[in-house]
Image (cartoon, rainbow, N blue to C red):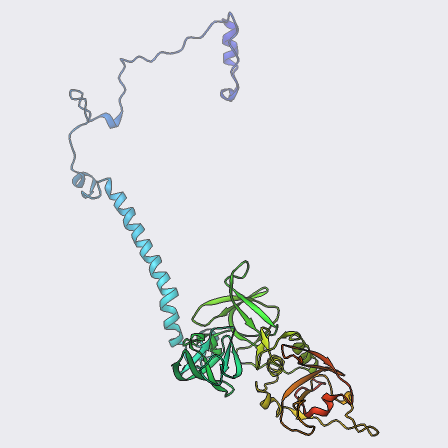
Length: 418
């Protein structure tokens, strides 16, 4: 017993934190105090308990004793307060959104009108085609006919998204229209639409000119479906530019996507910059072996004058669509004859020069233009095949019958322009 008490007296100050030793077998166990249930415990908050009824004491007036109103003393008030707080927060957030996205864009431009703060300068929109008589072509190409009949003479073709002016309403399924370059004829009424926003320059960010023989407009930037196949010299306007693609405005208010390769990007009102004749020749060469149709201007059906028209336009030279108009374009080239033979020296006819020829069945010296050709290289011409089924390349040399048929040679491009 004494040994056990000595250990108890020598217990360190922080012994309470030391691990208790296990009870040794045979050692005496110290008795623990026992709490008696019958001993009452006095707790302050149980002072009002009525022991007879087993309930809390009498009710209290919360307003008199605690200064609380009836609503404040009710538990449901907390839940109502939360709902009211959420409603106020939601209303405030809604008002903030309305203010930022609806009210400010309408109020601030008026406040800063006339200042030099660029953020609030309203873009000036000069509408070019707001006349109600304007229409826009919705087919890849549509033939402009001399009469409202399918077998009438084809004057030329007009391209997708090209604006035209309506002269008279539908007759036999055709409308009489005038092109922007002054040609008048009949086109299918179903090929036109009255909505013109797709051709308004100031409503868009980019002007695109198709320089490939054809391009596809798709429903999506990738893995979309085909909306329209468009031809060389088709003019489109775009508002969104991403890597490799543009989102273009389409007639009727729709949009589509077109790849950036094979298109020329310009400012909405900019004109194509003139380049050298070799680019013009390169564009003409894309029509080699295309199907020939009279006055056609696309890879699906081309003529020499049609190929010259679109190839010149995309390379910076505006030229008439018709063969007669092209015979007066540019400057005339008069090659000197050989001093000995008197024949035209073909090396003076440069790539890009346009030759206008008389009918081979008529007598030499006839001055009525029958057909035309483009010099693509020395001694090589782009012209209609003898069977008049395709447009193709043909070789010629001094003294050839073609030299005898030349009426005039026109040069529309400067070979030195880069």
